[in-house]
Image (cartoon, helix red, strand yellow):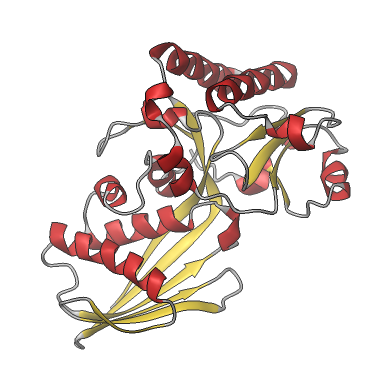
Length: 302
C-alpha cells in the first residue's frame, strides 16, 4: 500500500537568530516542498531513493532491516545522516520499520535554495513514524523548529520556540503592497546548522527579544509599504549590531530603491526585497536570476 507524506518549504521573515532564544517570529510556508512516498513490502530491506526538482535521482541507499546497516549507497556521508534520523525514529516508535519498504523522496525546489530540504525530510519521516517532529529535529539537525511548523502549516504563522511543544499561531499576512515584494536568491547556499552552532545564544537579552517581538507584531499589522520598509530596516539594524555584521543591503545593494532584508542565516540563500515595478530588472542587472514574487512563493490557505 502506498503511503504519501508531504511537507512545505519555509522562510523566516522576522526573528532570525532571535527565534532560538524564544522571540516571536513571522514564518511562511512555501508553495513548494518535498513529498515522501512509502511502499511497504515483505522484504528485509529499506530501499531509499531521493530525486531532485528535475526528477533526477541524486541519492540512493539500501539498508538491512531491522539493524539499519548500510549495505549500498551512492553517498556514505548522506547515508549516515539518514541512518541517524531513522535509528532515532525507531527508538521512539518500536513498530516503525518492522517491515521492508521502498521509499521515494521528491523535492520540488532546488536543493541549494535553503528552503528546507532538511526540515521537510524530518517532518515527513516524523509523520511516517508517528513521532514528535521537534524531538526528531533536536536529535538530528537541531534548530528552532520554525521550519517544522511551516512544513505542516496552511499559511503564515507566528512561531515561538518551546522545545518539543512550540507556540504556533496562524496569522493573516498578505499586505496590500505584496506585489512589490520579491524573494531573491543570492546564488550561494548558507548552512543553517553551522550558523546555529556558531551563534552565541547568551547574547540574546530580554530587551532585544522584546524589540524583535514588537517588530514582528507591527509587520503583521502593517498596511503601508513605507512603514513596512522602516520596520525591515529597524530589524536589520538590530541584528547587525547583535551579530557585528554589515547588512546585506549595505554590502551589495546600496543603490536599491527600497529595502533588502536578510532571511535566515545571514550571508546566503534568499533575501526579501521590498521595492517597486523596477525591482526584477534591478536584480537581473546585478546577475541574480532567481527572483520569486511574494504571491508565487507563499503558501496561504488560511
